[in-house]
Length: 208
Ligand SMILES: C[S@@+](CC[C@H](N)C(=O)[O-])C[C@H]1O[C@@H](n2cnc3c(N)ncnc32)[C@H](O)[C@@H]1O
Image 1 (spheres, helix red, strand yellow):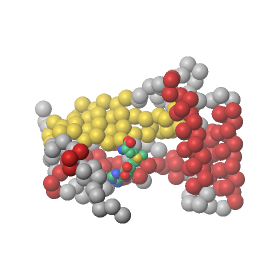
Image 2 (cartoon, protein in one colour):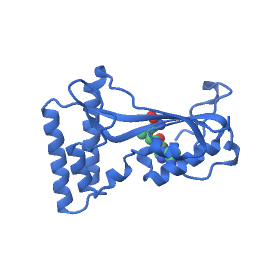
Image 3 (cartoon, helix red, strand yellow):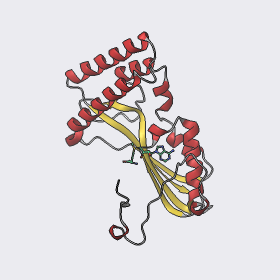
Image 4 (cartoon, helix red, strand yellow):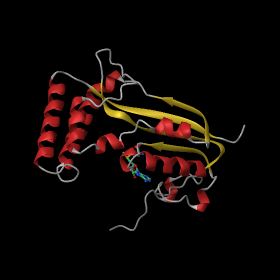
């Protein structure tokens, strides 16, 4: 194995460095009150639910300077969003489409527990942040074919992986098969999918 480190120092501007940190662990002293901006994207898959999200919010607050900003983009329930013929996303529609509802049944509600509908509510509820804005990015029609394909593949992978992990027993396997069939029906009818996300921006309150 090569002992070379990437990226190598000559590849990077002098004022840039990389580090790793499990954001559910205590913030290292050197990063307390250190950042003007913290940007987070798509970490929800690694969090167990609102309790973990609350820990992340608390730690981000510790890392920011007063008046600094957090921008957090992540999956917004139901994630796999079916879209209407006008190619618009119903922002308020948090209902799981039939194939996801079936999947959730197979894994005994664990999808329901992980999918966030709470990020903006949790941020709003935090005394540490002010000027919160939340938006749901719109559909990009020219990407829809690609988005549908990759979301269908991702879901098929999740269904497959669940057979060895979260779905246990014949009954669950049968529900997974039904979920797969419902997805295929939807796709066969020309149904389209988009990945529904939300972006939350907030300022660390400095009392101003
Ligand atoms: C779907 S990838 C997203 C990667 C990248 N942020 C992006 O938006 O393209 C999920 C990322 O979340 C990170 N993640 C999950 N839980 C984390 C945690 N507790 N602390 C730090 N990173 C975490 C993983 O390391 C992984 O890189």
